[in-house]
Structures are given as C-alpha cells and as structure tokens.
Image (cartoon, rainbow over the protein chains, first blue to last red):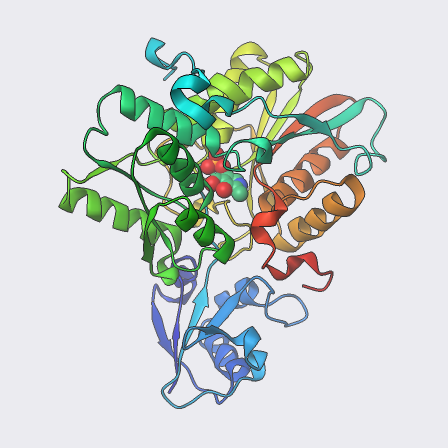
Length: 90
Length: 315
Ligand SMILES: Cc1ncc(COP(=O)(O)O)c(C=O)c1O
C-alpha cells in the first residue's frame, strides 16, 4: 500500500499520525482514501468544488505531482507521497 | 518590557556599518484605487517594506538583533545562528556580510528557489530541514545545533529575542506616527514571529491610546501565505502576547492571492502573499468605518515569488 506522509499542521486532524497507509492506484485515489479515513482533513486539502487547494503541494519521490500528471499520476504499490506545508513565520 | 537605554537607537553611521545604515525610513503609500469605494473620510495606507536593504521588513529586526548581540560581545569568535523562513535569513546574511559576521541558518528545504539562491549568493551557510516538519522543525534543529556546539554558534532566536519587537518599537512605530501626522486610528499587521505587530503596536498604543491593533493570520493550518503563522497550530513565539491585539482577522489564502494580483495591476504595487493578506484585512477593516486612517505593513516584494503559480488568475 502507498504511504502518505503528513506535515506537522495536519497531524492533529489524523490522530497525530505522521504516516498513513492508503489504498489507491493514483494520487487522487490515495488522497480520497486519506480523507475517507480522516474526514476532518478534508476541508484543509480540498476546496468547495472538491479540487485540491492550489497551495497544497503533493510530492512523489521528491517531485511535485503537478509537474507529473497531477492527481492522475499513477502510484506504485510502495509509493511514498508527501503533503508539504508552506513556509510559516519569520 | 520596554527598550533599555542601550537599545534606544538603531541609527549608526554608514562609515561604521555600511548598508545597515539604510534600514527603515520606508515610504507609506496610499491604496487609491482599491480604496475607491470607501467613504471619503476613510484612508488606507501601506508601509512599503521591500524598500529596506535585503528587500523585506525583516531588515529591521535582523539589524537590531545582530547589533545588540555584537554590542554584548556574544558573537566573538562565533557564527550567528537562527531558524528562518527566508526573509530574516536574507537580512542576517546581508548585514553579516557587511559587518564580517559569519551566518548559519536552518530552514525548511522547500523554501523558494529564489530565497535559497539569494542566501547562497550572500555567503550564508544553510542547513536544510525536513519540509514535513515545517518552520517548527527548523527551529528545533537550530536549538539542537546551539546545544551541541555552544562554542561555534550564537543562537539569536528571533522568536524569543526582545530585540526583534524592539526594532519595530524603535523604528516602524515612530515612522508611522510621523508619516500619518498622528492620524492613524487602526493598525493591521500579519504575524509570523509577531515582532512587527508587537513592537509597532506597543509604540503606537503608548502614543495614541485609542488606536486599534489588529493581527492578521491565515484562516487554517494549511495555507499559502508564506511568512505568516496560524498561531493555534504552531509553536507560539515567546515574544507574542495573544492578549495584546484588539482582534484577529483570518484571511483565506485564495483571497490574499486575488489581492496580490489586484495590487500589482491596479496600484502598481508588486508585493508578496503576506502583503495581499494584509491588504485584504485592512480593506475589510476600512469598509466598516465611517471615518479613520488604517495603516498596514507590506512585508516584501513580489519578485521573491516569481516561481509561484498564483500570479495566474486560475492558480
Ligand atoms: C513575507 C513575510 N511576511 C510577514 C512576516 C511576519 O513578520 P513578523 O515576523 O514581524 O511577524 C514575515 C516574517 O518573516 C515575512 O517574511
């Protein structure tokens, strides 16, 4: 199963976990499974129309998926996805 | 709480401190087109902080922190160390170069490429931290380094160093009082370390007890407002007193991005996302007034974010 790594500010909405195992063959399916497991994450990741917020960056093997095939990027069985926060304060 | 005599002035001759002599005295610019629909007695002004050397508001606290650490002899034989999101680091590196003080910075590896390139050009040593841990991860790394190598580093800790907010008490506050001829009624500022809000706000409140001080922060923990902190979910800076502001305005990232585009196209003000957030909040405050002078801070310019997608309408 792919692993999704959460940034510090999102962990309170996912039982304080840093890594979550998710089901999915694409980035979209993986994110969907994440918010199915932890519904309180949803408003922080998606806008009202269900689109990933443009300032949320999802990285696969060090690359922003926007520079790959976006949320349609396929995932290998052992893929590691990271959701990155913007840089706060100071 | 208030500045001690040794911190009473940040002025020093260029002959002694080079470019650091040019910190502050930035222009105060009215929003003319964006404020057009407000009642005639309501004005909105922004302090153009990208006019500072190093290109951001952080020139003020960086110079004051470096200056007071030097004066106290804390930097003898050591490198200045701090955690930063970028702007503070660029300011430390600028003045460190001018005064011959070596600088080491911890910052998240996903800092914008423009910022990393500037820091390297200025000769700073960079220690990149895990982006997943955010700015708080960079702070923890700086603490760890300072404890492990007390002879090598002087950790100046902008989040807990009173010289941060005192820089604004000594410069930003008096400049605004003078530039508005004492007419300011509302002060609106974004919070990262909170130095700008706390220092400017304290000075203004001392001189104009009726002035209303408002803090600006992102509307949630995941946001795109680089430089600002969502206080409820972040490490709270020691210099921040949450009871100090009269209110907090939460800004959605998309609203700030839309405002950044309007500021560029309708006012010729090419600024960064935290300035967009500040303008959005200031205009919201102004729209509820019948009379008054609202002043906010535009921390940096747009050229630091050219690689970001938000300049396009649909981003
Ligand atoms: C772009 C930007 N905006 C706002 C701020 C917040 O300023 P302060 O740390 O004084 O709260 C910072 C701080 O680094 C910044 O870089």
